[in-house]
Length: 179
Image 1 (spheres, rainbow, N blue to C red):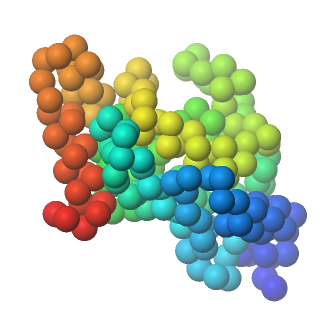
Image 2 (image 1 turned 180 degrees about the vertical axis):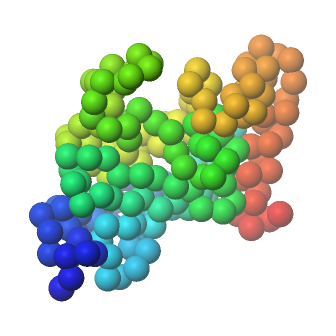
């Protein structure tokens, strides 16, 4: 097997175990994982099925790719949502997720995050995806990747309008193939 797909590496062996564990664990609601390409353990396709009681994104099914570097677990993977991309303060319009635990394990040169909030090898695909689901439950508009979404969420929380909720519901409908 080729090392370029991670199949013969230590990272590849760890990821194979982690994927098998997640696929067999029935106690992880709302998360489904597989490979984008059967020959590459370093790139997973995930489906996040957001529970109906989630305030803004309830009932949505959002697809993403989780791409692991060869240095995994010492360095974090990257998570990129696939079309339709959720309208969310912590998701860039390109689909890339911005969350502290996926930032490299070093001091933040801008001083927004402590090293303890950033990537650590104790994180797993499961903890990453559970953190992403919690971001759908409680978006963080304080350090936004999508400025428009953060602004609309802030306005909605202040009771100024319902535009954020409308945009989110549209994303949920698109994720279900209804738009």
